[in-house]
Image (cartoon, rainbow, N blue to C red; front, side, top):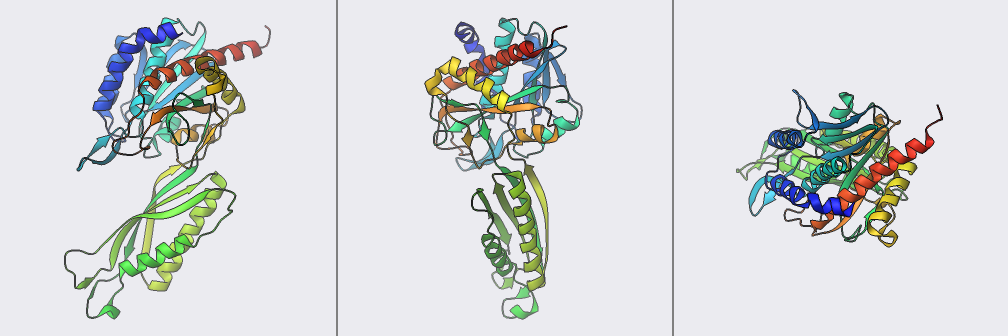
Length: 381
């Protein structure tokens, strides 16, 4: 296995370099899709793309069982060195490289001999809607086991170590607006001050208290009101709220309380407060057998001393919609320690790129062990 990983190293490094330097944001991964399609077809893989969306699916082999690998392909939009641009600061360039490398390694291993490996290159993870689009297309309806990967910051998983599961929390991103009436600075009684309304809403959200045994948070992350004229009291404003909960059940309660806070503040101040959910991500639901198989792959790749327990994180991942919407799919996500600094979503995030090769080895072993287990469990004919 390690010899094969070394053989594909130069190709994987070139793939990563291209993806890293050509980031594209959610639902706009057009060139990324074209590049991956061209590269993988050139390597002899069967590739499926779509007329109505970015992303692609690669299928190797045929028949049951079907073992899936999923990677995300989008980048973030953020300020880097004073300029806003697409930026791979969440590691999706590495995730794609691991998926590509896994395909190349499986090809060299002539695997699988029977059954199917299906690799999903999914768009729009950062929007929380990419997985749902693939689910709607029926792309996972035939999958028995599904594996994902995500780079982990050092505070969670040290470089050279790996976790067989990431216990992500649920997340909702909410965008709202306050609609009131502007007023002259000398006549505040003739309108509503959106800034004061927002202050009341911030306090109301901060006053939400749920079960302290389940981590959760809600905070205002953006507010804009007013213009260049300092003598106008702004009646209108827009805002964003980031809500997190470690379980889907607590997220339902948290969201309900946020809506209640909006309604009460609107009633008290005489303004209209409207909102929409711009991203909605489910909390993790991992399968014990999938976790066991990935743990064995980690131990065999890195040594048992480098296997660490599942990583619990307040971050969100739309990967978990696959199991929420299709409970028959057994899934887990590899947490890959890679010396990631200063942190995920930091504009100058860096990591130990050698761990891309580590991720490939773990993923390929996990796929092999899953086929072995299913074959052992198959009834005699």
